[in-house]
Image 1 (cartoon, rainbow, N blue to C red):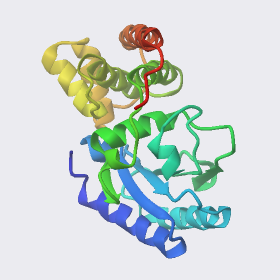
Image 2: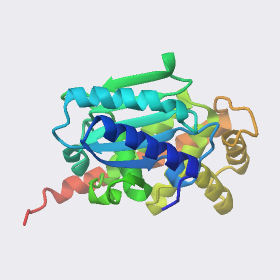
Image 3: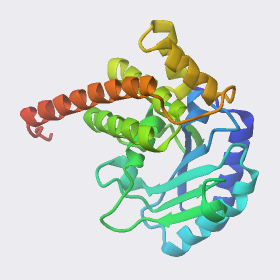
Image 4: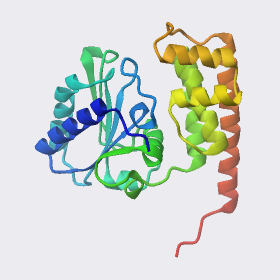
Length: 267
């Protein structure tokens, strides 16, 4: 587990203090994303936080928690805050549609500086799949026990399929660095089952020669703010699509294998 930057931990502690001031339902809080995985770049990174609350958290308490998150977000040491809240039951058995109670996002990309979304019955957020996986692999406990004690495992085929979809989304909607470096770290998960930061993924790909050096070096420079970001060029797109295809093939094979095994007997 990587120790997050002191500024991020201090901010997360402040958020949790405000949350516990307005509600007694907060059971755990985990930093994930770049701050927890070792790829923190203040000018480009969000503070990613997953909250786990009691199953009986009320709508009034969620409203109060949302206001506390937005009001405290001005102290964020990064680009903004990305925070989701789920119940203990939702975290213990992660499953589609990946339901949640609350999502709060702040920063320059949000109209008006912030966005608050309340979860609805029967709907969810696929991104939670990866939040759970990252928290289990390297989440930093701001409050509560180690993440695997409260968060159940996400099936590997589901993670692979998510990563494949994310790479294709990144090519269409995100800068080149996002797509390329996500492809590098997705390839590491595919081959080694490890979850690493975007920067660590790119550096590993350069060391091992597992991708086009010029494309990856360019993406790393963009991620670190040393070069101007831009949409993916043809060489970058080809690399990302190759990785996405490999991920999708592995996901489909894993799903078939799970289906062939059938349901497991319960003891």
